Image (tube, rainbow, N blue to C red; front, side):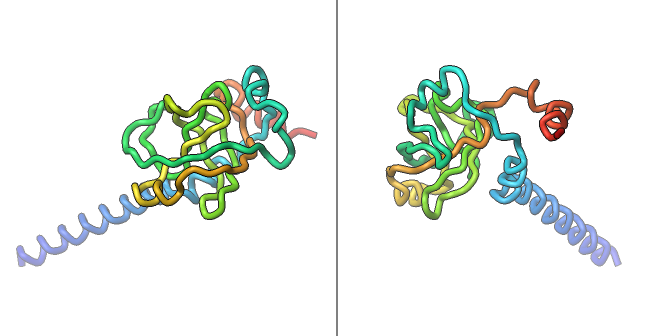
Length: 167
């Protein structure tokens, strides 16, 4: 009888652990990540960032040089690296910017949450989970569209968002 109770406890513990892990994976997966940022407000670039972008700003995006990295660790913004993140020159694309990347199989919505010593000017560095993927990505020209330029928590309050939606 005690063996049966132990098996039930182990089963329940395992079940709860699997469900919790599934929720964590879903929360940080690309689809959940894109869903959060797809609903953000679109803002025009301004200040020194616009000057750094130059005349290449258009409705169809800008051309950037892209590379990929696979190093684990914390980003400049303080969060662990994850799929859906890119590093950029903060003078061009400040931390918190959200971009739409057009890069073949790697196209999608990305958050600028990291920087890099060699990432200067119109360059981005995509985080990819494996060395092989990063090497296959190589370096290439890509098109990006800015969905949100930087992040100012004072401007992204529910009150401000409600004002932007008013007629």
